Amino acid sequence: MRPRSDAGANARPRAGQLDHGRQGKRHAARSGLVNWPGTLLNGRPQAREDLQFQLRTRCAHELWLVIVDASASTRRHQALSDAKGLLAQLFDDAYRQRARLALLTASGSAPTWQVQGLKASSGLRSWLEALGAGGGTPLLAALMQAQQWLVQRKKRFAAEQQRLLVVTDGRLKALPPIPSLECPGLLIDIERGPIRLGRSRQLAAALELDYRHIDDV
Image (tube, rainbow, N blue to C red; front, side, top):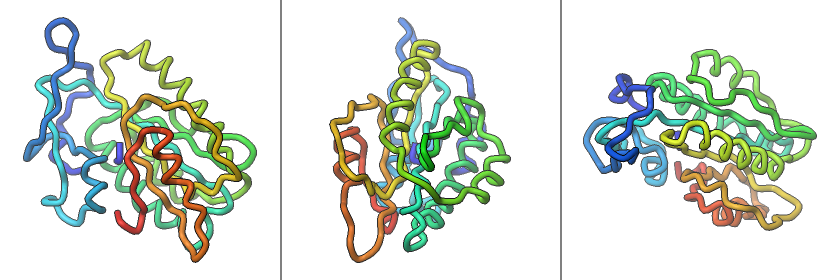
């Protein structure tokens, strides 16, 4: 999810289907839509050559669901500040590719939806610049809300390609059983410092997401 290059700027936002309602199979390519999970697993791209692309015979529009942990603990060691750089790139590329975006922040006493399935807009940059860390860590509540929302969304837009990006330091008091969101994606671990709980990796495994530490992106 991941979050892209100008090569995908002409991607069609409407859903596309093959015969019998099946979507075209993705495959590696030299141009097309950027495969953000695959790209970020190899580190943050520094040049176009670092990007991994994917094509579909007919393009179903994509939804990128981004969950951002902005609790007080993410102030440490500039964790949230560095995450903002990654998110800014993601939002810009979502805008270029006309992807739809759902954005959920986890901070304070309860998670808050910022955007729900709308086309990415340039106004997200202003929101991101103003984002600050504070309060508790309602990350588990955010994941539960996201799961329910995705289920309902899938009923309405069966052909939509959903991708998930979770940005968190994983500093939870406990990690209870968490149902999978059944959405492919990536968890970016922003925990830093000499003493780390290391729960982000466990969380990624529970959600069946790929894992990457931000220092390796």
